[in-house]
Length: 419
Ligand code: SR1
Ligand code: MG
Image (cartoon, rainbow, N blue to C red; front, side, top):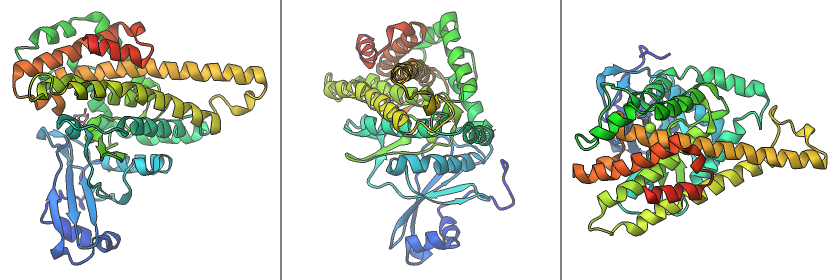
């Protein structure tokens, strides 16, 4: 399944119309004739082709896996089956998150092609933040998404057999997990050919991190947890580039790095990317202070993000405890109900600790590793960029080596300000 089949060919703007015309439901959705369809390849992520196709009656988005890492070129080969895992993830999570995910219209196993609704007039959250916009409901919508997706795929909501099936299925998504294992948890802390950073400005801190034993132990511990703690089905790459927004609507996309793992991994990815947006704002400011209000707003998102996640997760747990973990039948008398409430709160507090750790790791890998993010990359002046990145790295370091300092979102906000 992973390698190109006889049926596989990478689509182009020229071949997409014939491809869609042969799939009746998609042809009908677009309307008219293939000659009338407008096709644009818009993929700007690291891995895939993405085509937007507009016809007289409607539109579709076609996402196709390439047999290599797009941003690196054909020398970095990559199996195609990430498209299948992305489709499988949507199948499982879609019913629980509803309109927080795009509607999936078609999956073609031969061409490793996923077809979904076009999200318009949505834009990528990261791009909107770089442009200086605010999206009032985005952080809480993503929190809601993670709470629903993780709770309903955990042992709290389902018999263990269902999660065991997910573990077995998504264990096959090894190519993306390998990328995470290397690029997120290891490479930023060692000399690795794919690493890069703003140099020479950050040479000192990159070297210091590589020599920092407590930091490496902390990062490796979270790496081990990523591999050994199958709490729920994860999105696996939930940064601000995986969220599309309007002023009033939020959708989570691109779950091809999905696997079963610790819930804090998704939470931490989102928090880290909001924090990086915060640290990057001075680099985008048209004049000193021009982005101060937006910066403040970005920091203020951490608290409602966390509160929404925690509240939603606990509400779901209290209402839908149908799984083999903490069987509801054990907690019916008042003393047990009370004890369960305390255990639930302790569990969520543990998720917060994981969130802080995984957020620190995400920040470090986006600045010192291979896959950088546009928040910093779009700052043309390297001195200015490095100043923003250094502040983010300082915070990330504290998050990993002094985790006891972070028990509430307010701790995180205060430390970000101080950094
Ligand atoms: C080679 S892929 C690099 C990164 O892009 C994806 O979006 C993931 O974040 C991955 O780590
Ligand atoms: Mg992606």
